[in-house]
Image (cartoon, rainbow over all chains, first blue to last red; front, side):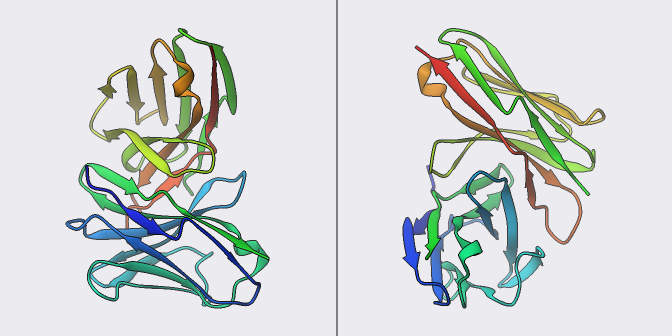
Length: 111
Length: 114
């Protein structure tokens, strides 16, 4: 069964550092997403990406965040200057007619 | 604004029991509804997807129903097993905005006691 792959599974970073979270979506899917889940809270939508551009972003997705699909297979989320409150599980997802497929997530810890 | 609520927040049952998890949403303008399972510290595993035109979907011991007009969905788990212990998340694929993003409930934490 096709999978969405995320790397790394866990990343620890110093406050103020840049991080890049990587995802390989399912190859024939057209819509890609990032969601996050702060410990003990709901899974929240961050951004959707279609046809090589952002199609929608939430109020959480401010100027510190950016997404790219640099080579047609990878899909990345960059946080420019991490804050303590960015600590969360970040999920990548891609979508087909049968619904969403999520990756196993990257746990980001900002210290 | 679409809000998704799940009750109960936590449930503990003995092995073998049948159980029902509830999900409600405030805006019936949905494209579909998806149930997920989340193990502690892990990703989201899709269980069942119900399109807005459907009333129910079944997969093995799982059955999900949808009543769009009343804003409700249920996930029925038959003959529960300890391996079913996890958090179950309901998410609606909301019609609105540029893309049909998922809006999640807070989940039901299920513990099945052997």
